[in-house]
Image 1: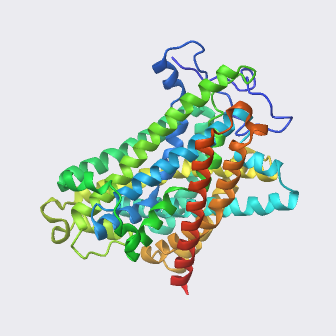
Image 2: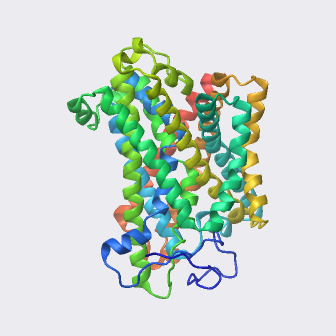
Length: 457
């Protein structure tokens, strides 16, 4: 049976050069077997990948994936597959960076920049956290309104208070957080698996959809939506988070075999959980294709989807209030699981870039309020109009597009450096694959950014 121990008494993490450890209260707090078998060891390392995976299936992905299926049936499943493979590559590198260096991506980036540049990068990273949280707050607030008829403004305030729940969970131990997030992910997976099964999709169409088609590039509308799927999938805060929570397992950095083992099992954990995220995103698109393709329905907002699942003229005989309720439950689960990881990422960025160490409750409250405030202001101005508030999602994607290169480029540079990583630096094929992916992501995000700004004006 795995145990969590007091970090102060039982922590083998070294090499921080006097600088505070990343997520100090849980760093190195989870025991791993020294001579355990494969499955026992894998179970000990399983958990951080779940926290990472929720960022790849947060409410910000839902509209894009379902709209992709509704407009182009199964063709964009190939885009989801490619995006997931990119995510696996980058997150494996992120975990390795934390394990080998004992520092997270924010700490290493700040360490190698001037004070002024460090502040600039911190502001950009904070905007990315705000952008990510906006979708999660909106999703949770709307889910509470749909499920319990709670006014949207009140629902948003409730999501601000849920940060205090994370503080309590941290006292119980990091494994408890992992277990709760895993439960929420299981709810999302089961809900959409059930709804997709009811929708009776084409198996042949699904299989064929994972094969890339040339019209993804040649069809402007399909290309634009594809870029939206990629942009919503690979998010900067997950790279900072992954480099930190990979350090929650106990590690003796004087033993290279121990480091290699940690990298191996952390990578397996990350890839397994991101595969689950890939399944969820696929289910979202399949649901959109099976229920809404050819119906000419308006599905641009969460409320539209909720109402459509209860409308027999749109989804046919399977329409029912239960389907709508299940959708809202999954939306709430997605929003809550994502807010936990977003708050942790906010702490990592604040401590790493500006080395600000304040009481945990104050730190998490500040991080959360930075994200809740713009949503709350919009909710008050537009008097709880869901469609208007969801318009913030467009702005959130703009911020994410801007912030992504500032996280990906340092990650690839650091993990490819023998000076930083030693013998664990990226192999040549990983290095060149990562740079290729980075360039492609930047080009796609710049294109998407230009398109979005053009639509705004």
